[in-house]
Image 1 (spheres, rainbow, N blue to C red):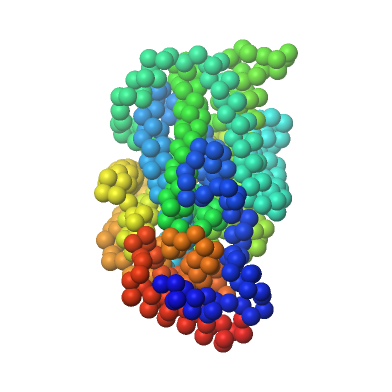
Image 2 (image 1 turned 90 degrees about the vertical axis):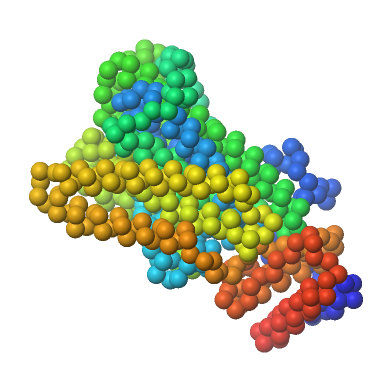
Length: 568
């Protein structure tokens, strides 16, 4: 194999650089991610966990947006502790699926939207893109409303003015992004810390019933009245745009493509995700428990976030003349809206770039998304006031839940694929658990949609009956058929896992990077799928096999010819 390696090295050498520079070639953009000289990225160490914390925390803040607040408060104030088990199950689903999303990005070097573009025909791809954009707009709408309500509660600024002011957070995002992704993660850590401290204090102030909490966690109960809120909780907890975001954030963090390194990165991702999502679970449970302890046990109906804020004044804890509980509530609400804004915008950029191969400047993308969200927010506030705003927050979570299967099912198909994931594909147990999670989401959605259709058909208003039968039922059947087609179709895409040979020399790293680049159109980023040439997949079993050597020779020749034509 050594003689062939020497021949291949000549094909990859750049005549404008020295021999030493050729030998020490590093892929562009990866030098900053290289490990310290005395560390081996293939080894999982507890010390390395701190360096890898970040992507999952960026994702987890999406599980704490104002829409989650509305559904948690609605569930706690109307049904007490009864829906705590729904939060637990939804968090387990989210944990499992987020781990799969990140592992998919680590192994394939493509995020979910890119893989969908590679796999599905253009009409199906566009349909998935439209649904993903609806989910992101619904998320952004909750962030607009939540931030505006928080500003109104803290500073008595009218909601209409607060909604307009939320457009200014575009510049906060751009400032954070200009400092690098690590700076964005640090901003998110600060917001998450603020939210956590606020609710830990409020939880102790509420003095909830421990026995009722245990019953709510361990005794599953649901009925037709709580189905709507349970569906909203699942939509708020397992958010579809987070799968696109998480699978993209981890790609640039992988220092090299050796299988041992990929295994270590997957373990780090598991720890990162477990810590981040369980922190989010604690805060969501705290919100529901606070609502149950303060409102449900007192028989008080909460119809707006503003009412929840003012009802918390009755806790009696003050600093001077300042009621502590409602102030903490308002601060946490603003922090939640602003931090979720960062994550939603990043997810939107990846979705547009992945599905459409269209790269818009961040400020343009952000302003368009925010304007689309601001318009319905202003209309609802002007027409229905606080009550309509609160119900709109909950409805947005139901929209997210309805879109959820169209993100989960493709992701499970990709992570089950031998072609794409090689030795990192799902085990039978993980695959079963993932499909079970998808089944829960689908069944909840079917139950809720059929419930809505039945209500529409039985409605005394003729126009509602006509719309339910003429539009609602065909749309439901069409989307169900589309989802079944996604789940059952034969895989056709070409983007797969990219490994490097298990060598310690730097040339091996350069070789697998260049061979992977062959699978991309000239000028595109490595890892992008191409219908022309597939990226090679190297496993640990590759060695002195003649077929492997000949394949390397052919790829080296193709690369040499390409460089000759392009003058590089």
